[in-house]
Structures are given as C-alpha cells and as structure tokens.
Length: 293
Image 1 (cartoon, rainbow, N blue to C red):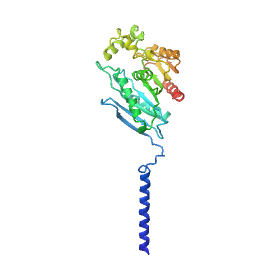
Image 2: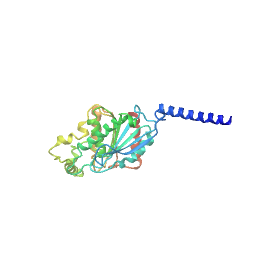
Image 3: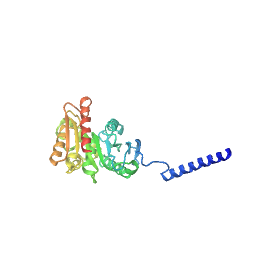
Image 4: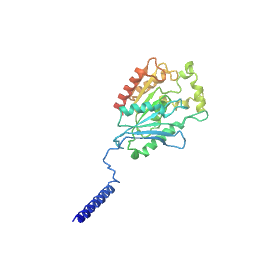
C-alpha cells in the first residue's frame, strides 16, 4: 500500500510539472506580459560607425509605447568638445521629477578644423531619432520628444526642432545659453565677441562676412516658423560667449510668430549659473515640461 502511495505521489508531481511547463510555454516562456516593465538603462548604444556616435537611454518602470515620452539631452562644447556625461546632472533631475519619462543622453561627432559640424551634427540627431523610432517597440517608448540642450547643444536642439523635425514629433525644446542668431550684429561690431567669426570660419570652412545666407540657414532665429514647438529660453546678461541679444531677439521673434515660449534673462550671470538661479531654472523648466510635455 505504501509502495502504491509513493507511485501515486510521483505521478502527481510529474503531472504538475508537465502542466506548469505547458502553461509557461503558452505564456511566452513564463513571462507575464501583463506585468509592468521594470526600469532599466542601456549605456553607450551605437547608432553609427564612429566611436562618438553613442547614446545612453534610461527607461522608466511601467513604460509603454503608447504613453512613455522621451527627453533628448544635447551637451554643449562649442561644437568641438563636450560629452554626454556633461548632462548627467540633468538625467538625475529628470529621473527624480519626471519618473514616467524615458531619457536619451546623446553624444554626436565633434567638429574640428576642416571637419565642419554642419550638417554632420544635425545628421547625427536625425539618425538618433530614426533609431529611437525603429526601436520604439523594443524600448516601449513613443515618438514624442522633448529636447533640452546647453550652449552648442541648445543651438542644435533648436535647429533640429525648428527645421528638421519633418513629422512634428518634438513637443517642446529648451535652450540654456544657446546661440540663436549667427548673423547677430554683436558678433561683428562688439569687441567682446570678436573671436566668434574667426572661430566659425575655422570649423565650417565658410567665410563669415561673405556668406550671410549660409549662417542664416544655421540660425534658429532666422529659420523658425509657425507652428514651432513650445520653447523655453534661459540666458545670462553677462555671458562672455552669447550676446544678450541672442535670447532677447529669439524671444521677440517667437512672440511675433505666436509660438508659445518663455524667456528668462538672469542679471549678473554668465555662461551658466549655480545657486538660487539654478534652482529657479529647474523650477521654471519643470513647470514648462508639466504644462507642454
């Protein structure tokens, strides 16, 4: 009797195992597709053959390809320097304040003498956006983007959002001390910015004085039209690299076109700031994102 009981127990165990395996097989190898996805990060994703063509992506918990919007962060460095690690502070802020969003922190190919940033760096941003779209199901993200750029990265963010976003996927763009108008009189007549024109000539290979049309085509101020995505601008009135007119005139142009925008000019600040004004920037940017993205 005991022998028969043991045989029955083994039979019951084997049956349960088979049923369990069968159940797992019918349910995508044991993965419950109804469970929310966990947060994850993928660093140094290659989007091209160049070593500089990489991005980091931070994916939130519970993401879906119908709801999860994407921040794209673009570092500065005068188009010739910088790295995505420069924007890690922004990654941390966004992860804390907007936990339901994905974040993409990008590198792009850096320019040098004889190696123009234009259109190379815009091409890189276009390739990144295409890569994100092709992986929207894999990443479980939408095709809705918010750009946040600093300095040269802010210029690239505005330029892409205003001119190259053919499918209107950019819902908002933020410029922190970004150049907006390469043909600004201050770059020609103000001795404080006398190095700008020679520098642009070196990295673009295009004479600054004789080719205004070339530089207008690279200027968010000149190429923006209505409709353009909601835009938030932050500048310092003692910036040694960006004339105050860059932010003031961009704000006025957006107002004239009827483009939703906000503009802050910090008294006594240069090409970036800390302390109370940094907190103010964060608060205003967060409120802008909440309203428009």
